[in-house]
Image (cartoon, rainbow, N blue to C red; front, side, top):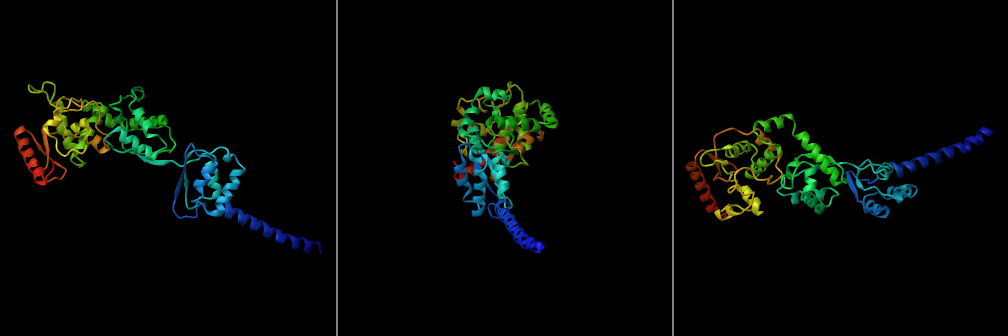
Length: 348
């Protein structure tokens, strides 16, 4: 009789426990968002518990949102919210998300350093991707002491940045980001690349500066080693006419000096600007890169084609490639054909 009584109460108790377990799983371990795609929530340093919940609400399944709120009210999350970029996948449960945000276990991101023309451009692009202030970055890039810390000055600092994809946290500080870029720069300039630069009698900064000109001259990666070889010939040429070396006469440096990157034609009146970037006026390389060069551009310099051309002109078919010449007379013929093609198209 007693056994029957126990059995009568045991079954409902077990059912209640199972229901509670199912409810707990339903609230704590089921998908928080209920969606099939991965989303991210960005919590900045000004966020508090209320703003966190406001950001979660549009993403969350209703019962999971309430479960998250209940967990938060019984933890330190109400008082302190860790900034970060948090991933919410299709299988991310409420408890998992709660634990990540409570402990600041943010998700890293792939950040690609772009090949851009100016440090202001770089700061703007990084400011769009990271929790860094673009104006702060511009100020830092113009700070001689900061640049010197990493072995550069305000004109050569673009050489620090190698356009690759890196694994970083959204909340990375500027100091840590710069330290990371320096570490990656040293990895990039491995024994092989350093040895090739030494063979050319160029420093990594000089290689980067030349590569930035090559990148501006052509987007055709297959032609870049030829263009690099042509400019290298000018750089190394010493004769009676050019005792200090032949000027590079690189049109992209004129655009950089004027900060007019949309110029289609470089007229003589533009060549008189008194700027160290005027490679028509001053022989040798400009004082720093005229853009953050691509990896293809850097490797094109290190693996340049060694030839005897010292002139080049864009092809008249507008293919983006060039006609190369050994003599000035041959170059004038190439330049004439290109000028005619520009005029026919009404390009000024």
